[in-house]
Image 1 (cartoon, each protein chain N blue to C red):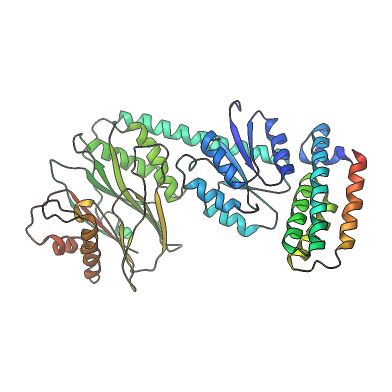
Image 2 (image 1 turned 60 degrees about the horizontal axis):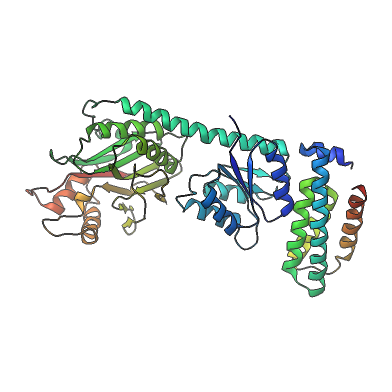
Length: 372
Length: 103
């Protein structure tokens, strides 16, 4: 890998550390950008978009945690890998740093060889990821109209403990879902809705399912999986085509459910005990832009807790003039109402309670219920 | 410790290291005058910040004795005990002089 033209932003309030890192790294041929504080660092990152950022944690005023939070919330800088610079004794900081999306840390005092080795490693990783995205995209482009993709049933993965109501109208056909058994304890649930019904979506659906299978692995955090899928989709989707989606990853081992929202209606969370709520968050749509910020919330769960993911057909009705905000409330109540219905049958009961028995549906409907 | 050895520990050329030491001496002087001022003004926060900075920069170049004394000062200052730090400060001054003489 040629280091030419690769820029690295170094952020430290101590001028000596800046100089030391610059000396060590510029020898390797990188272009070094320097910032003595957080705001300056964010300004440079936004403007120059370096390949990598080395970020000191202990800085006056805006510390490294603040800086990384803001970097991750700016679509221009969200995907730049960040390595934290920490003192020997700051174990807690390291863990907090990983939580906030740092890829690694370097402990001070640093040896220039360690610094350049780690920098090289992470640059290589990020290049490999980009190459992986390109190769996945190339493969997907070869998928011609795939066999009408099979939708997974609860009987096929009983351990995933889910129920599904799926209605695809011929003329629409933008909604779909998937369920993945990632390990014995980890499951992924995906509900997506292609926007724009003008183009045939069935082969796009197979593409997304292939991408889910490839990228939703224990190797990646849920947010990383969806970002990878986004980056491939940006390359393969026809112009103007995109999807909204909600991805839920359940880890029964550590009792966590992580929800990633990409411009989709909010998931419903019905705890076994306690009040149900909507998991509201902002998130960009999937497959349209390379630099995006998705919504993410992680919930600590207990056995018996339930989550419902669904498409917008569940919560809006142009004919009946029901808009999202109203529809969401109706949806939330309907999910609570069926608390005693087994999860396999709960989605159907919810649809019945909202639409009645013999309704003419206006849009596709997907409703997926999961029980922890 | 000889500069050559310290430079080698960091994976740097001796000239590169000397340049860094020059910068270090400047920032260390700055840190020390801030520290002195803070002690006079009884400013605990500024004292621990200055000691922290000195601890980091000296440690990063491998001047571990200076870093160790600075660490003690930082901890005492953070704990609010800035009395009786004169000894430590004169130690820091002495050790810095030794570095300065090698330039």
